[in-house]
Image 1 (cartoon, rainbow, N blue to C red):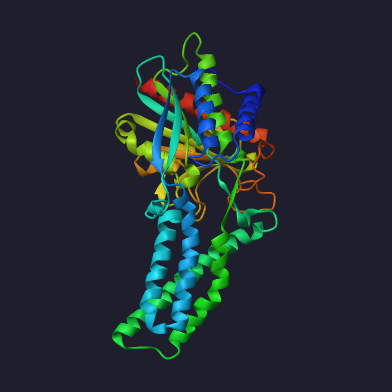
Image 2: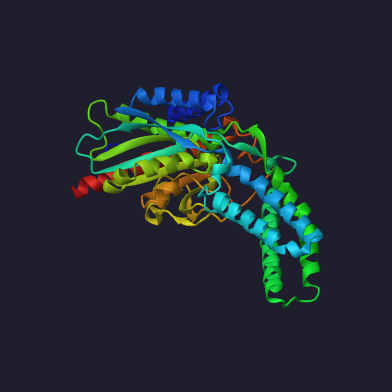
Length: 415
């Protein structure tokens, strides 16, 4: 197996490319002019070394992803006031709470976008380059990241960071408890078996829950994060990996039977819309040729290096075998890493969309999933290249290169 490795120049290239996109194209929300220009620049770089470079447009409704949170809080407030002033309209309150719960479940838990129709259409664009192997294609590895940036979350600012988890958890508990209470009241009103004192208890519980639900209305701001660690650096790492393979293959291409796809997804921050569109439109070819997705998301600190075995709030299974292989490769290179499911409440990555259609996938992350700290850069205005440890970048690049070479060696031995 040909020796392929990263050096300090590669790391500088990655951080420089990340910083270039962040500085030149701030405000990279899908469908915006900065995102379109950033995509064009990424395509230009990919075109300089890939055999083929493509861009694919898709229609999505990005504002529907986070906008639902405002509706949840508004519907709860309306339901609480209706129940308090007109208790005989308990069925209306129950329906409003069911709608709130359905929105929360669809948009932020399952990432299915049932309520996206409430938002206007916008155009997104996935950019990718392809490097063919020296021999017959027997498999492909898609190394991916997303280049759109997220909105700043209100409760992740320095002053409010410790409120992030309580705001979410308390809001979910209040909605579930209120829904259970109003459903019980609705059943009682239909059967005529009212429990003394139960209705006032539910009324006052919902009124008391308003201060806990209200913060959800301001969950996100209109400001846009620079999006360096989440997640332009991932695109830069994938791009540099492709450059390294092309540089090493000036005479003989190092990959014998593995097609390498360098993927820059759009609209990840809008509920994985770019990966969803691409996986659906390419589903047949992804399943007809053995495919592996090595996704990269949220690279900050080497000490938090991990590989996901499940995604999308731990609902969608990824490839445990792939995650463990990456973990073992990390160990062989001297990096300490773990394989774990993305925790419930942790959101999702583009790897989840590959997992949904049955493609082997894992996500590489280098961010603490268990603590919200005041110095957190994720979804804040502090997410610049200065928050990314070069050591973390080198580790992810080293592991990615080694994984790709190892998989190609495996398929070459079989053939």
